[in-house]
Image (cartoon, rainbow, N blue to C red; front, side, top):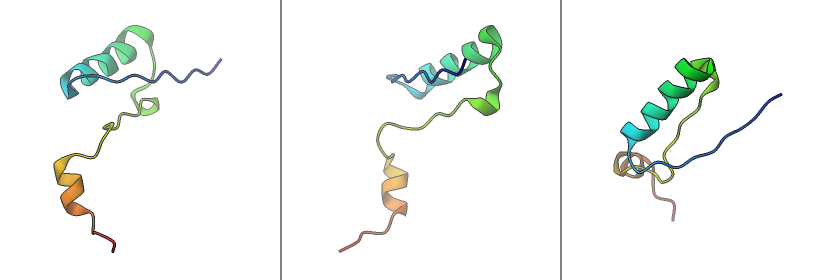
Length: 52
């Protein structure tokens, strides 16, 4: 059965630890785990062109 857990973490470190737990303790393949920031980082905002 496929499940899609969604979570928010206060720090990137906390998210990385959660990923490691899921991979090592639950046996989920790392390639099946996707992590993304809830909001764009400053660098991402700078790299995007501004549309007017």
